[in-house]
Length: 146
Image (tube, rainbow, N blue to C red; front, side, top):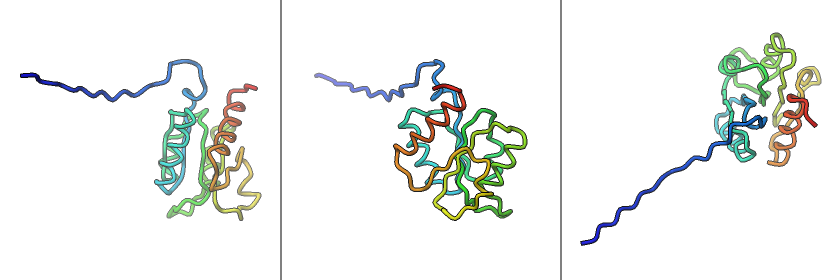
């Protein structure tokens, strides 16, 4: 009598530990809509960015923020205290004046005053190529590379 045994392994390929900015830079996503945060996280993973943290509200984002992080923040946050992405940006800039925060929003009627201080703007919806362009631009500036 013959017996067959099949073994299946799930292998997760991890990046090599090197100096590549894709692996050492933390990206913090702030969006009150969890499905959109998850989608953005997956899109960034496809681009090779794996060090991603997600926050779905102002307080969580503030606790998770680390110096030298790249932040992609929605503007409209459903917050009981009516805090916005601009409010978050202003709070972060008080203790990290070099913070790189990208505003991402489907709202196009954002005043110049509210946009002030954001390093870039990523209008929703955006393509994978647009996301890649904005994030790579940010990485070059954060790490002062050409």
